[in-house]
Length: 199
View 1 (cartoon, rainbow, N blue to C red):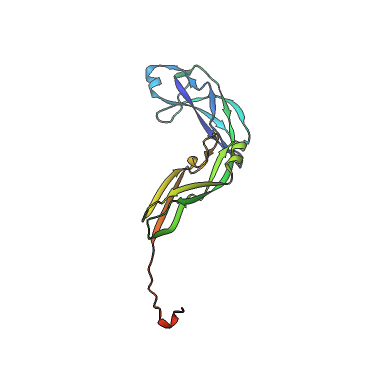
View 2 (view 1 turned 30 degrees about the horizontal axis):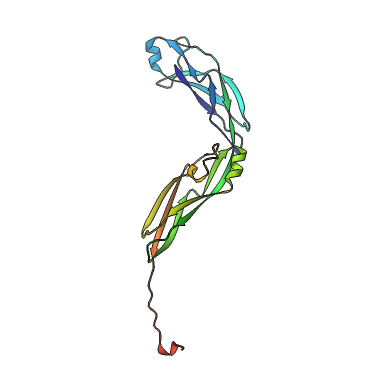
């Protein structure tokens, strides 16, 4: 038995990405000599998703590949199922801004010098309803309580939105790296002449 791996060609329409595809059946039984079966690496169904913008369905013939990436001849290995159906979900995308805020106060005598982070924007995919609920900004909080040097934090971007928005996922980058630099207060001595003092 081998799990059917789904591979795609092409790209969804602008503003959309392909969701997690489901094959039926998702496991195929191969029959052949122990030598030939031992050489099998995977069973792949190729699906063309070029230009699609809504959920689609397709039926195709999976292909058997060996450890070298070569196609295994059907005369050597027989598939119990010749055709596999696949559901192709399509998710809408949205680009949102990422903002970083600090909580707490640094060690006395220090203040925030600079905040740097990447990425500044991230593309998120999901259902239209969840994308509306997401809003236009994601906010990450960095605790700087009693800090006097550099504070570095890494976030899973998915942790920045509510767990109830189950359909959402990042399209490109899924990590946020933040660096907050603390700056020590500077002192300056000013000369004050007696005639400058007014009672």
